[in-house]
Amino acid sequence: MEVNPSSGETVWTGVTGTRAALERDGFMIHPKAGAYCPAEWLDKGGYLDAKLARRHPRPWSI
Figure (spheres, helix red, strand yellow):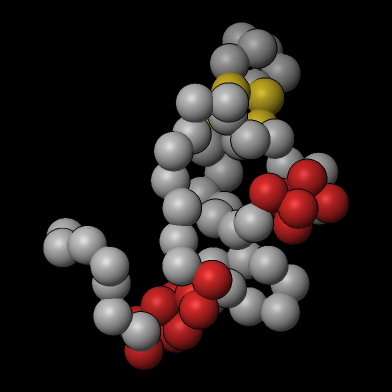
């Protein structure tokens, strides 16, 4: 999440990754965010990799 400087509201950046990766790179995490992804979907930097996600089955149905 990022903060909109004019309104002060948080804005979704569209980035998914580990808390450590997001914090390391200066992104904020909404305290009520409940989304997660399996570790097999993460790249070496700690972010969601769409190619890896497509190779591994989802633990839930979409």
